[in-house]
Length: 115
Length: 115
Image (tube, rainbow over all chains, first blue to last red; front, side, top):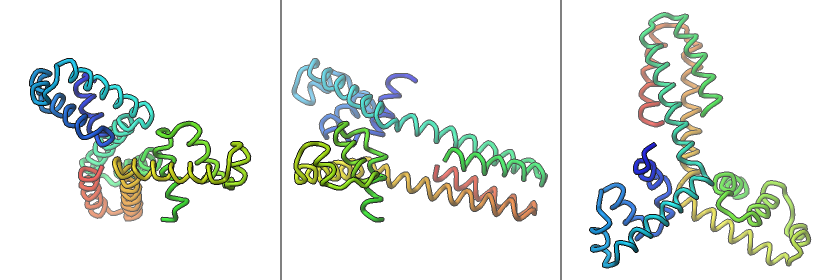
């Protein structure tokens, strides 16, 4: 996964665990595409200070992910959703009671084991 | 929800964010039913010190839940699982293609909106 996308997802999952200032800087940098120079001007500090905050927050987010694995779990649920929908649409298209029943058995198994 | 059950669930969700010692004491107290006296003896400290650790950890767990709401989300997914299974079993029992198709429409809607 591209690093910017990954950090944006981690921010969504763990942003509430950062301080308000950290969260704002990370959101402006990763979600609103502000540059280091713009942020340093806005916060009345050096580019280096902003760079350090971003680097530190990135590490904090990765540490939370290493412990709670919410991104990993959210990917699993996303895959499960795709699998469920694909099978439900296949069932709908089949219009045959035996095929429908066999897809439903598969779905019951899928939901019981993975959700 | 009974407090002991709630804390046990919170420990499952956020235990990794406690220190090893905090996690161990909380697990022994809430999951393995050790008493304050047994824990104070085991850790070579006072009952009051153990009581304070447990109280502080409970607050830490509640603070994480207030920010990340993982217990709330996990309840939502649990309810979703029950709803999916109930409908799949109803579909299986109906053995009628129109009923089956209408339940499948309902399930597609449920998965798209809630998962």
